[in-house]
Amino acid sequence: MKTVIIIPARYKSSRFPGKPLTLILGKEMILWVAELCSRVISTENIYVATEDFRIKNTVEKAGFNVIMTSDTPLTGTDRLAEAANQIEADIYINVQGDEPLINPSDILRVIEAKKVYPNDVIKGFCRISDDENPEDINIPKVIFTEDLRMVYMSRQLIPGSKVKKNKPKHYYKAVCIYAFSKKDLNNYANFERKSTLELHEDIEILRFLDIGTTVRLIETQKGSLAVDIPSDVARVESEILKNKKLFLMWGA
Image (cartoon, one colour):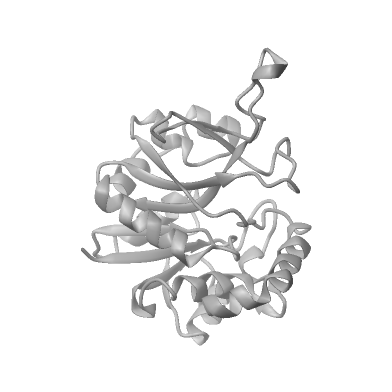
């Protein structure tokens, strides 16, 4: 089965314009992500999907493929669907361009899960660490069934508890590694608008729940930090410096 990794990278981010080209310890964030992906599959099967020629030039100069998309996709997943129509593969892995601490072994786990559950969308998740605030709206929380089918994601704290003693010991967050088939992506894009839940929460994966697709979760290692707003950059840089040996081993 042919697997490709597509990294959506939009320059005109509403919360953080130019985010993919933000420097993290002197290197563009999109290149941190692409280089970590190259520890999983060959560079020829890694693509950055973007609407912006500044991103295109940076990525191609570093030796990675670029798929130019329109500037009209509603979400990163819509951009991925547009790019996937230009690439033939069995499994399309979406690694978000704002996850520069992604663990390559977690990408492999998501790929293997898609082979086991070909009819489900596969998504990573992990426990929220003690130094993160689970009530932070920039950290999407996830709840799931006992067999790891996603029930819901929210920017609010979930699950809620009526009785204090029943409050969960740990909360869980989304990790932005996904596995799709082309059919999954086409079903998503053919909806042609943001679904009600997706619009309320500003969480694009919720569209799959609205169109009746099962999202199966795969637990990843703790430590992933997404760059959602400019202040997240310092936290990511600190984490990289703290785990420098690990990142050298990963090849980033």
